[in-house]
Length: 193
Image 1 (cartoon, one colour):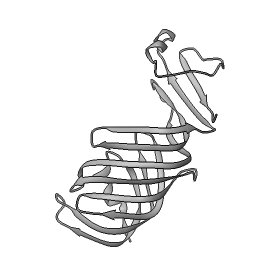
Image 2 (tube, one colour):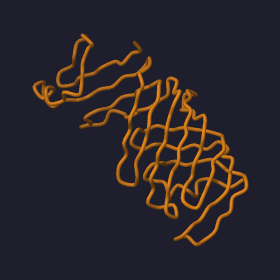
Image 3 (cartoon, helix red, strand yellow):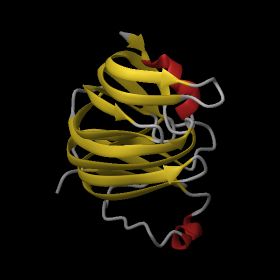
Image 4 (cartoon, helix red, strand yellow):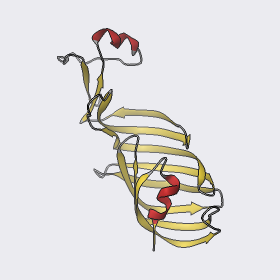
C-alpha cells in the first residue's frame, strides 16, 4: 500500500486534503521533474477536498494510469454525509503538471455540492445538496461546471446584495420565496419540488 498524499502537490489546483492508499501494478519512472506513472491501482479510502466548493469526497475503487493521464470509470463517490454519485473521468497531464480534467458525475443522490460558510463581506454562502448530473471540465487556470440537478431538502443559499436596487443587476437569479427578506440580504431556502 502506497500513501496517496504524494500526489497532492501535483493536483493542488483542483484537489486538497488528499488522503488514502493505493495498491496494484503501477510502474513509477523518471525524476521529480518528469514523473511517469503507468498501470492499474486500487484506491483504498481515497479522499479529497474540492476547495472552490468546500466539499470532501471519498471512494474506494480502481484508478488507471498512463504516461499522460489518470482515468476512472463507474466509480461510486461519497460525500461526508454518505450520499453518493457515480463518476467517470480523466485527468490529462504532462508529467503531473499542466492538468486538463474532464469529469462526468451522474446519478448524484442528495450529494453535498456546495458548502461555503458565511464570512464577513461574503457575496454568497450556504450549503447545497443536489441530485442529478454534472460535468466538470477545466485546467490549472479555470473550471467550467455544467449541471442538470435539482436541489434537495436542507439546502440553503444566501446571496448578499449591497442594496435592493442592485438586485436588478443579477438577472440570472429568480426569487420565488415570499418569506420576509432581511435588509440587504436575500436568503433562499432551496427545497425539492
